[in-house]
Image 1 (tube, rainbow, N blue to C red):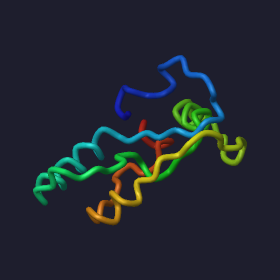
Image 2 (image 1 turned 180 degrees about the vertical axis):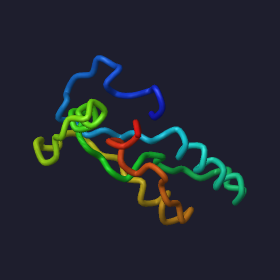
Image 3 (image 1 turned 30 degrees about the vertical axis):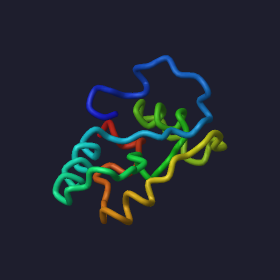
Image 4 (image 1 turned 120 degrees about the vertical axis):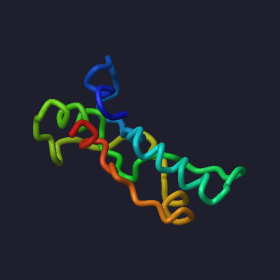
Amino acid sequence: MGDDRLLRNYNVGDLDFAVNHIHYADICRVLEKMMERQLMSKLYNVVAPIHPTKAEVINAQNNIDSSGMSVLRGKTISSAKLIAELDFVFKFPDPREFHL
């Protein structure tokens, strides 16, 4: 996600489900870190550490405040191993801010 690829541009359902997204710039940074460390056989969940609902992301992209309005459903994927093993700091940890 990021730049013109925004959730609001797609027809999505289950708006109260969590997003497991990552900004494309962070994907590139993860790959760079892995290449620097010559990691070839590692498995990481490459996903932003914050998991708002789809509705919260879409509302943020439309400049609508929706803080605390929804109950999170669905599965969230943890990026804890990626953060710990690569000392990775996300440039874009929150999908609600991918459009900024």
